[in-house]
Structure formats: C-alpha cells, structure tokens
Image 1 (cartoon, rainbow, N blue to C red):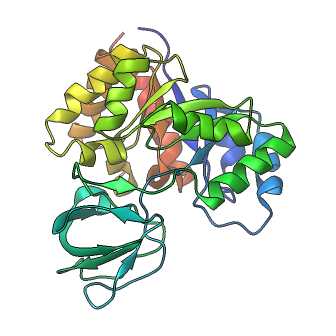
Image 2: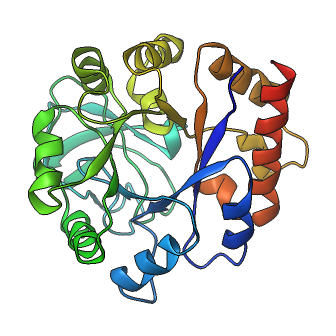
Length: 298
C-alpha cells in the first residue's frame, strides 16, 4: 500500500502549527476562511505559508451558513445567501444531528416551525436537501477578499466548496487567474460533476461533512465515496475522521473501521477537519494513528 498523506486544518493562532507541519505524514495545511482574525488576511496567509507546507485556502462559496446569532423559534435564522425553496421543508443543523421544519423562506431569512431550541451561532452550516433549492450567488464577499489577498501574495491553492459546474471554477479564476482549485464534492450535483469531469478541472475532494447529510439516505455515502475515488484516483477525503479523539484518548472502533474502509477503496490523502485540529495532542494522535493504520493494512 502506498504511503498515506494528510492535509491538516490550521487554526491561525495555534501554538503547535510548526510541530504539525513537520510531521512526516503532512503534505499541506488548510486554512478555513470562516476563522476570526486579529491581523489582515494578507498577514495571516503570508505567515501560514511560511510554515513550510503548501497552504490551501478553503472558500465557502454557496455553502449555506448562519449569518447572525439567533435563538429559534423565537427569531428568524439569517443565512449567508438568499435562497428559494418550496416550503415547508426540512432544514438540518449540527451536521445532520438536528432536523427542523422551515415554514417559510424570505430571501436569506428562514422562518422555523420549531427548534433547534438553542443559540444558533454565526458560521454554523445549514443543509436543505430538497430538489427545489436554489441558492443565489456563488463566491461570497469574504471569498473574494481572500482571493484578492492571495493574488497580492502570489498564492494560488484554493479549496472550493459545493462545486456544481465549470462556472464555479471560472468565477474563482476571474479573480485569481492561475488558481489551482481543489474541487469539494458535497452534494448530488457535485457527484454529477465528478462523474462528468473527473479531475480535469481540479483534484476532487470527498467533503464528507456536508456530503453525508446531502445524500440524505446514510447508506448512500459509501457509494458516493466510491464514485469520487473512481472519478479521480488522487482524490482527497475529508471530515469526520477519527472524530472520537476529540472527546476520548482512545478512538472508537467505528473510527478505525471507517478509515480502513477509505484506505481499502483507494484513498491515500486525508484532510483532518476543524474539530480534531484545535488541540495539538489530538491532531498529532490522529496523524500517528493514520500512519499506523495504513502500515497495518500494507
């Protein structure tokens, strides 16, 4: 079995980034553009690029997120984009763990029938799995600002969320003409794109955080993952990896089986997501575990 590699999410002010960047399995760093900054975008990107690993800037594009803090059902939930969808419709929060009913949509305003009965924070992802859904616009203002910063620094590696068509990639290259785009596949339209284009417009990524929710029937995730690696044998797989390490020093058996399955069907590059990368011990444990598991299966 060929060597496994990892791209690690890099919290911009984490004290352990240099150690992580030196790990022998690491082949890149991912910067999540929803993270708050105390410096300019240019300063942060330049500093992180100095860690000695390729820096990938993750743009949100049409990914739906909460725009303002809210406590439903007593107030509306405002989204990052204006949408159109037939209502009533199911809306998913917390990576699919919370399902509520939207009774009306007005631009970027969701009016919910019930919960989630908690504070919904800005930046949280929202999934609406319905064929009538239309999301207005592609790149956000924040995305464009990061692309401009990358252009000024000569950086070019972009991860692009919720790619549906060639026009999504063209929109990035209008701002950053020589962008190297990693195409995040996160829903059924993205899977169709993967089948049609493979890696001809950019390396594919199976972004399981949203993809698992968007395929709607949980068992369909296995077939979706096989579709992506068949379309691009160099595809990256991301999210929900060794997630039990966030709360426990020993990973769940299901986490081990999950990664073993991904290795068996051909994935060799793994992206460790936000939750597991906020703590230096956790991310190093995940990297070592990935390496050991790959060796065990050789």
